[in-house]
Image (cartoon, rainbow, N blue to C red; front, side, top):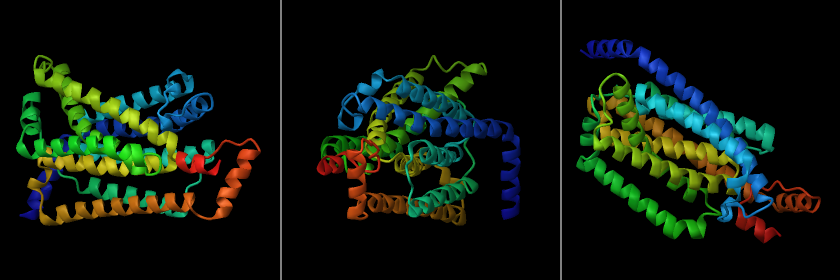
Amino acid sequence: MGSSQEAGSFGDTQQISSDNVKGLCLALSSSLFIGSSFIIKKKGLQKAGSSGLRAGAGGYSYLVEPLWWAGMITMIVGEIANFAAYAFAPAVLVTPLGALSIIISAALAHMILGEKLHIFGIVGCVLCVVGSTTIVLHAPQERQIESVKELWDLATEPAFLLYATLVVVAVVIIIVQYVPKYGQTHIIAYIGVCSLVGSIGVMSVRALGIALKLTFSGTNQLLYPQTWVFAVVVATCVFTQMNYLNKALDTFNTALVSPIYYVTFTSLTIIASVIMFKDWNGQNATQIITELCGFVTILSGTFLLHKTKDLVEVSSPSVFMRHSKHDEEGGSDQEGIPLKHRESMQ
């Protein structure tokens, strides 16, 4: 009986393999553009911060910096590819492929920005990739959506409405109470806002992508008000993510921002997808436990990445002496140290 179910699943996969290939190719290209954009934007933020108020301190001088806009355009191209990927492949397959952007941004940060990643950070990145791969390999089949109205019905069910409400409340609390106090010293404040908002944004992106896909295939979904509601939610989420991701990039090491953002964003997005689309309803206990092991693995990677941040920032007095000496000689690379730590050193 189990063999027949597996054969059926395999057969279904073969029937939609063409769309999956398109989605995976778009997701991979998206990771390439987004991973590169982290570095380009970081260089633009550094250049803008040298002549104006830093983004991490509430400044917006980067808006007149061409290099930052180059990075922004690169990220937009990546997000467009990612947007298109959600129209062809399920979120539980597309989202974890963002792991490639971690490798790209970490490698470029090492070569271009001179940022060093501790050995525990490397192990954390590996765990993130392994955990994500586990989730991808055991991901449930995507349910077929025929219209935006069907997605709207899923989004307005009590379980997902509760999740969305909790996300909004958590984001407001973080922005109002925690960002002013801990934003400059705790990376999870900025990344938490980006990831929570992003999990809702992906659900809306998928809805909008399906609407456009159905429209291009001959079934116009632009006539339904639900399509435009999803579009407004997407725009709001993108703006919020961009604002707080800029603050995170300008305050903390890029090699830490990218993987931690990936882990939290991927985890919350998969949780949102499970709640909204009830992905686990058709799976057995073994598949669900395996996916949970994938979650534990990426959470372990997050823990190691946080420990790496602590080791880099508070390793020994000699580290601070080297930074101070470098400043006196005219250097400006203090990206591994949050702004409040830098101010206390000066």
